[in-house]
Length: 237
Image (cartoon, rainbow, N blue to C red; front, side, top):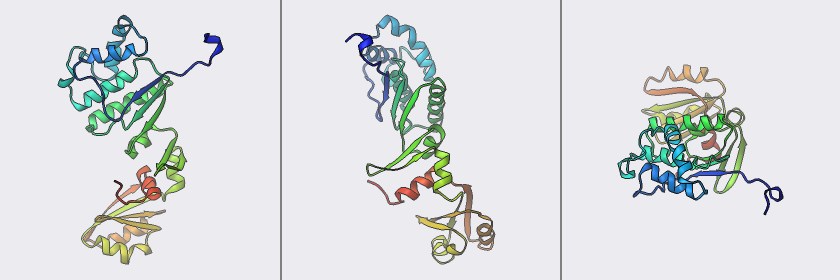
């Protein structure tokens, strides 16, 4: 069909949950072969490989075999591969699962660069701090059903008490059952920790100061608190 007779289609790049790179190819060969699926010639692609590898923190690794790469390097190569066709939309399925903190932060930085460059990113993740850092608009889905939708900071402000005090130590579970209600809006026990949700933590913290056997951590509520409130704390298989 002539170009003027059809709608322009957005270019899409995909980063799957599990890396599916070819173990028999070098780093550069993985990019070259993948580019052919989009009709990109080897000549054109070779000129872009240094730029893509530099973006992925893999500069100078063109001739390295895949078996010599760490898990984090393979993940970054998969991201670079998804960019060979200069996509308008990048779809990522749990892009930082299994990565060490350094690799995770590098990928976060690269995704922020793509957003700043005008790319659209659709991301699935179980890391709530990742979603809170990267997403402008977020959907929480449980058992295939959409539970809530909105900006991360808006969801936190609307769906959860603003402050959390985590109480743990000897007798924390008994304390949560017998005393917490007098000082909290809501209290949930998970394992050996009582999660106390409050509008103002001053009264609770003053009370805990009289219970030296109990330890506590005071922090602002975050997206993980929202997720657990909406989906529950029961283990999912």
